[in-house]
Structures are given as structure tokens and as C-alpha cells.
Image 1 (spheres, one colour):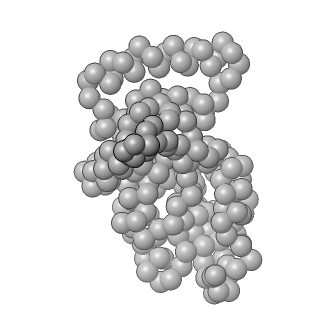
Image 2 (image 1 turned 135 degrees about the horizontal axis):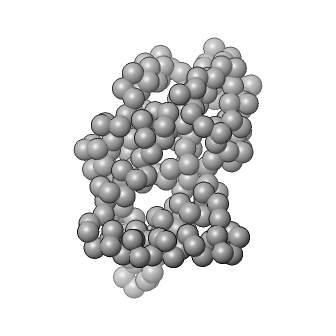
Length: 206
């Protein structure tokens, strides 16, 4: 439990700690020509179906996009790709000054939490390497066989609600007692961060 002298840093990822949306960078990094050709056929059909059925939302669109590219992939394989992405590509789109500011805060014993709608595939290794806590959208995995046990595979769906908007604030309040912190600083860049901003004493906008 944090003490009263502690400071809590709540930082959005895409467009805040990075200069652009990491999802598209990850899809390009993780996928070959065959997957992209398949996606070029399926993505417009999927998005049109959502609009026709009146079910369009950013969460459903992102879930469908990840499902089209990675449904059936072994969790171990996705995690390995995430580690490689963090090592090889993520530094190129990271705001180095903000990252160093947060690392310095963590080094002083302050709590730094990345709160993001992106999935844990690449956020988990990034946060482990940086020493940050993580609240994010989580993917659903399922074992497809019992004898012998198989590595869990991505179902194409989320295991948690999309961590954006009000869900960001809900996840933060579920994980932390804000009264334990003397100061709360939130970093973000979009309307999806407004609910998180409402929990903070100080807001830094990008």
C-alpha cells in the first residue's frame, strides 16, 4: 500500500507516451504479406457489417481488427512478437523525454501506471522493462486441446472491456485507493482520457 507521501502517475500510451498509434505499427511489424492481403479483404467487410447492424464502436472495430490478424495464434508466439516489437520498433515512436520523466519518478519510489486501450501483447513487456504498472485491454485466450495440453490461443475477442473513456477510470479505481496518494498526475491526449483526468490533481495534455 502506498504511503501519504506517494505520487501516482497515470499515463495514457498511444499519442501520449508515443507519437502515434502503436497498434498500426504492431500490425505492420507482426504480419506478413499474406496476412495483409487477407486483411484487405476481410476488414472492409467486417467494418461494413458493424455499421449495417448499428454495432459500430471503436472497441468492436479494434477487437475485430486484432481477430482478423491474429485469431488462433498461440499466446506464446504473440508474446514473443510483442517483446521483439518493443525492442526493435517501439523506441522509434516513443517520446523519450516523457519516458525518462516517468522512469525518474519510478526511481524515486513514485507509482507509475500505464493506462491504455492497447492490448498487453506489447504493453506488458514495455512496462516490465520500464518498471511501470499496467492497466490495459486484455485479450482472451483458450486452450483448444487437452491431450496433450496446447498453448492457449487467441480467441479473437477481448477478455476485458476496452480500456478507454470511463473504463480507464473504473480500472484505476479498482486497482488503487486514491486516498493513499498525496498527488495524482495524469498524462493524456484525447477525449478517451477525460475520465482519467477527472481523478487527477494535475493534468498534462499532449
